[in-house]
Image (spheres, rainbow, N blue to C red):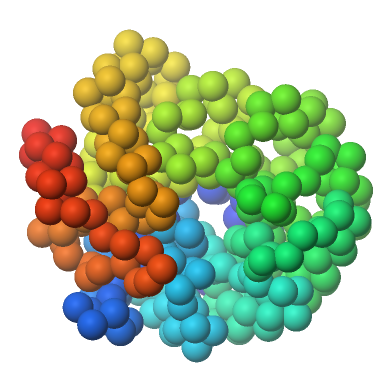
Length: 304
């Protein structure tokens, strides 16, 4: 764990690109601890601003609570306080609280609060969920605004007043008006992270909304490309950004959109293509077809 306060941790995340590493599985789908530690070391070596383990790209939804705990322990040991390490928590409120406490005990620096599982709820319910998790830990909490767990500016402001350790919001909803209202109301009280699938596509417009960083899945297998792209976004180099979008990101997105769940599958496919095979995705996700692998290989070849 770093020595930073929750607010300092969140501020550090906003200063660079964020890595969301995949979780390494063996060919039979079982967790591969040794391979995972190697993958974390490789991700850290390229200099991300923060590491989010077992997030959406890390297949949090497919891991057992015991596996989540093991993933966090391995990552904490490997990172060794060099940068902020954010652990996941989610599902129902009580399970999220347990995962939050486990992560804090393991030495994580913060938490990404994933959307609750399956059920529908009102804004008052999601607010109570967030507050309960924040109260269960001293770690900084980043709320993942996605799926059914979307939040409005008034509710979020109230949560910021009640929860000092609510330090960030990762947006996976893509509601531009709401993000504008949130930033206008709350401003720099929070750190804002882009979290839409293939976040590079939205990086420039989101920068104007106060979203200084984002979760790059592409970083998993093309870290230099991802970091160069992020640097171009931050300096508002439109020509470089749009050339990269045309030549790689948008063709990559076209493959990703073909089947549900490919946002994760295509990342593991990319890692296989660059010689860093992290195993298959777990059901209910499916891996890319051989033809799609060939298409992705053509895109990756010039950039690896």
